[in-house]
Image: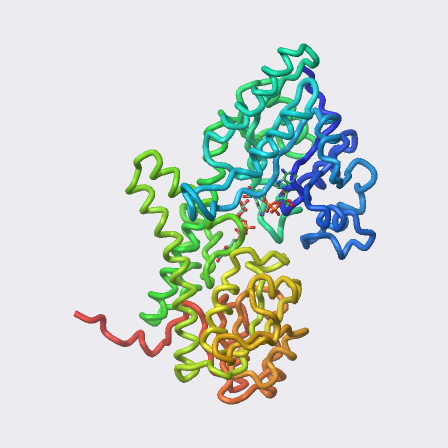
Length: 481
Ligand code: NAD
Ligand code: UGA
């Protein structure tokens, strides 16, 4: 089989397909790359003249697109045509949690992967390497291979084509907000497969910019499973530190100091130890739910329960923060104006999928709060879609509502509390002397990311609650016997 890849097609122009293909195009000028999608609006946005209208925001993505789009990087809805011309096809479609039927609420819905495999099976010509880029349950490659093989049987019968498929797993480890950096300097690239020539073809692409030592090759199942496990371990650290944030509040310790102290042990390491209102994003929850489902499927119920706890703590963290806010505001937020700073699930992205802000804001609206939401990148339309309530429309007995704010100051005018939910840099240097004067007294700062200048806020007369930061006075209390 041929090793040199000249033409790539990527099915799925989302958060992974778009940036990943852009970086491959940037590093491999001799390869023509077509990113295809069924979503016409998305493709139109990828093709927009004005680079601030790209469908996703990632630092430096616009520069990469500017360099390669129209040269060796193209975005299109011509799925059939580009599949038929490709030597290598990446499947980078969504794999959300099933919402109904067998495995609902846990198993991954693979209908988009299946549809992609069927399209490839039908339209691909000659030798084609099919690469799983989406995060998939272990053994999905078997399903893909079976779908591809049905078309081989048919073509062999009619003797019209000499199709041949090779399936590889090449999971993506990028994080949103640092996607371009992660793709340009990955910790590792993982490639699982059986056919050595196909593996070599993909390795050769990455060798254009990634060191040989960082390219790991495995069997298919280890590669597929490693992706789920990497996400499960990362989420586990967040739930661990979030559980400890509650203990710090109860005992008078400071979770930031605890994180620094434990992270200094290089066996533990200091990454992913920031307490938060709970992990969000499109993947951690769905991937752990999928892991829980797979463990149950194989009869490993104790293992499944262990991983389920990571999700349970994450839900509990959001709920307990909500309770703290309501309690501190004299037991009711009804009719009170609350400034919400940050709606994205993390900083440096416009993505809000599974953001802790969605749950906390919805619950505050149910409690009757009037929210003024400011996020540097999230649009009014996105917030409306996520909260499922129109802007300024009173809900739940005519009290709770939300309004889009253009700035921190705009959100804070007349507010009883400022609630920081996303760790945007802009929130680290808020001029509390300015903000505190436009708020109603007593003015509260609830910092669920512990990123603001809290001593300054206190100096300006604000009351403060910071996640994981226990009152120092409590530390003199004796433990109950
Ligand atoms: P996404 O929803 O942003 O994009 C998926 C795209 O695939 C959509 O635009 C959709 O229209 C398109 N699509 C679906 N079926 C199609 C078909 N049959 N033909 C053509 N287009 C089709 O999803 P995403 O965030 O890019 O995630 C994709 C996969 O990568 C998921 O499995 C996810 O778990 C995994 N992943 C995501 C991230 C991340 O940071 N978002 C990181 C690593 C891995
Ligand atoms: C995560 C993984 O980090 C990526 O390696 C993986 O490729 C990706 O999922 C995926 O499979 O989709 P992502 O969700 O983009 O990336 O972002 P993270 O930086 O992991 O943050 C996830 C959530 O955890 C965010 O809500 C963030 O605020 C939260 N978090 C992160 C914490 O609460 N504390 C931390 O210390 C770190």
